[in-house]
Image (cartoon, rainbow, N blue to C red; front, side, top):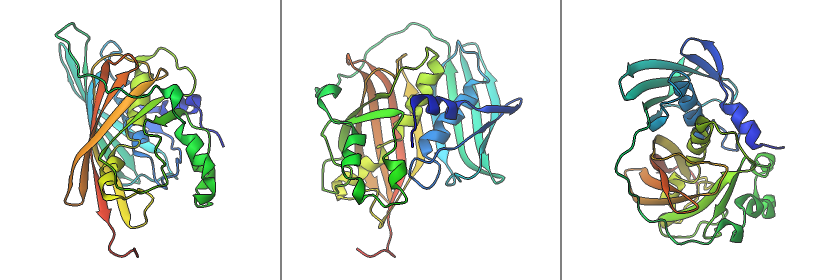
Length: 290
């Protein structure tokens, strides 16, 4: 099986059904439900389709309401809330089986000059010195359940390279922070929406699981119920996701069966281009054996 960058762009290329209404296809990435990054990115594409391209998205805030069903398409309804002099606001509702599974609020802003600064990127090894996560997974493919093995080991549209060279199969107690390089496998076109949508897709990967690290837990642990609850992204500057970006994540708190994680994307030359925050369910199942 193969899942290329071109396949990812096709996945995000929604079918228009009516004014303000779009339909998206699904892709199984081994989660047994729609990957949160997919519906997040598709909702962004639906919203941007109703906005002047000269006004790119600068912030988006989504809530995951129900688990997505991989077997049926997702329909996106866009509400045009406001078209102002500088900002445009949209609300998107994702529907399956007649029920909302996700909603998104997004704001779009015409480009303008202003004060600029950003925090310093941490000093980490370059991506060329690190192993691709897919390579690590394929080395341990025999430990993946047979029904998930083809999906988990297939070619990917995104090349993730963990800075610590961590093993995704191990569940050891570690600090609640991580960093990984990411870029698409292959070049994309110059459409800024494609780069923002792919970053939105990628931003859900490895984010909330960072809150499991200090507890020595893994998302593959049958005792854990892990799911995204909400997800926010702020886009600060233009970037290309087919060039290496460093995703620096920390999870400062977990409580009440929920974990909170946040991240910053830096270009290779150290410029902060996007910020991410997410709260997720990290519930320990009491009905599962230890």
